[in-house]
Length: 215
Image (cartoon, rainbow, N blue to C red):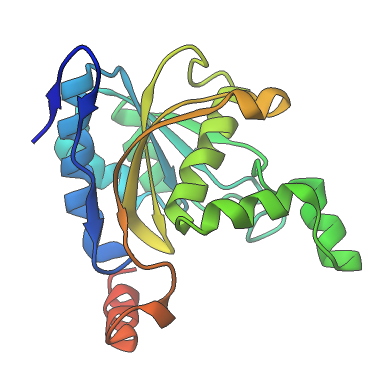
């Protein structure tokens, strides 16, 4: 139950007992509920292959949806990961598609891969992962979308991401450009997994198998 008075907002955070695809529908439902309660205008969704944004139409159809995909060349040089038919479905649904360099990677990842070590940007990424992969990705896509002009840095929006596949994390953020990263504000966590790795989950191998079957 969400309540407000002049001194505080009392809002519910949902914690999932496992990570990944099995939480997708609940995450989208909870995100839309809070989206409506706060009167937000845009929802920003991370994706690699387009399944989560299309699933989001079940709840967010008619809303302003921004989809942030991996940069070109992330998996295959010169290519992006969205299948052509899925991309067309998203465009036909009026979604704004963003392809850009990962905020927590960029050239620093190239240095890491060639010479080893870790830089401050990737270190910051690992700190956010202490709260979960989805938390890290929500923060990351907020910067990526802001840098591309797909989202306003002056307003709260709903951000949705996940662990490996599907979605399991929803957050309300005020984004920032990468050159003003510390202006970014995490306003609310709507939902997230309680666990941070398969090692920390009961029956982890069964959950991993189930998620792989849903990819």
